[in-house]
Image (cartoon, rainbow, N blue to C red; front, side):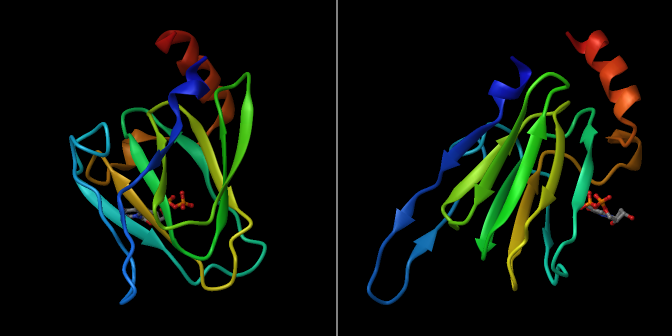
Length: 137
Ligand code: TYD
C-alpha cells in the first residue's frame, strides 16, 4: 500500500539537564536530500492546512512545539497521525494526499522538503490526484 511508505522517523535525542537537543541530517536520518524548510505557526484554532498531494516532493513534518494532526491518504486508506514530540518526524513521500488540522495553541510545525517551492508540483484536486495515482501505480 502506498500509504505504508509514510512513516514516523525517530530523530536523535540528546537529553540534558540544561535542555534537550535533537537534530537531523540528510541521507542519515531522512531518506531524501533537503532543498527547503518551511514552518507553519500562528494557526488559528480549527484551521486546516494542506489538503493536497505533491507529485514529486518528499517531506518530513515535525511538531517542533505543541501538536497537530496530519491526515494522510492514498485514495484507498486514510490515517490520522498526531504529532506532539519534537523528536518525531512524519516522513511523507510524494503522491500521498495530506492535510493538517487539530493544531494546538502556539504549535509550530517544521516541514523539511526535498524540493524548492514549485506550484506545479501541487495536486489540489482529489479527482486529478486519483487519476494520477492510476498512472503512478
Ligand atoms: P501551501 O503549501 O498551499 O500551504 P498549505 O498546504 O499549508 O495550506 O502554501 C500557502 C502559500 O504559501 C501559497 O501561496 C504558496 C506559498 N508558499 C511559498 O511561497 N513557498 C513555500 O515554500 C511554501 C510552502 C508556500
